[in-house]
Picture 1 (cartoon, chains in turn brown, orange):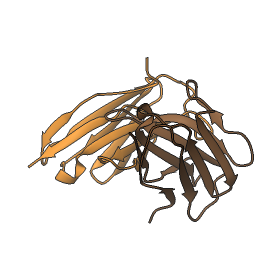
Picture 2 (cartoon, each protein chain N blue to C red):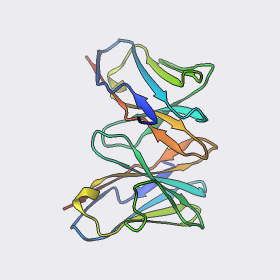
Picture 3 (tube, rainbow over the protein chains, first blue to last red):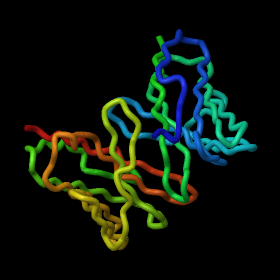
Picture 4 (cartoon, helix red, strand yellow):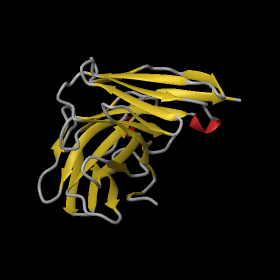
Length: 114
Length: 109
């Protein structure tokens, strides 16, 4: 069964609105979670590392004020796309390490900004 | 140059064929290596880890050559259900994973 969940699975919103995506580890605790973005026919690109109880670490080129990450508990990380625009339309996926090196991915969230 | 590079594909093969995918990585400090499978519009799922000694899981065989910084995946007796995109994944450290662009495989009847 799934070990990492994401919600919502689909989002369609108007340009300028903010969208929050949740990532939950279902039967284990994750002090670290990862957020990725995947554009059509491209690979997953790491956006940021979410750290429980501290600030997220963002990859180069990812705007931290645009993509707000909160890791408030050991089972939940949220990604908020603020003032979303059409170019933010993408497939957002989170992952969490359950064992020492294995990553489990959430089912992803498809965001379409009109 | 990308940190993880793969054959771009697509690979179109008949059922029963043997197909091999290659992957190279540039960071010599990389610690662990994986092949993931991603179906269209789905999240990646772990196919297998890759060890220096080589490892096999049914019809799938993975090899790692640390000296050449090269990873391979061999699929024997391809099935229609093997059609997917195969991602080469390198773990640098502390679960910092880098993905290849993926190789698309289509197995045809």
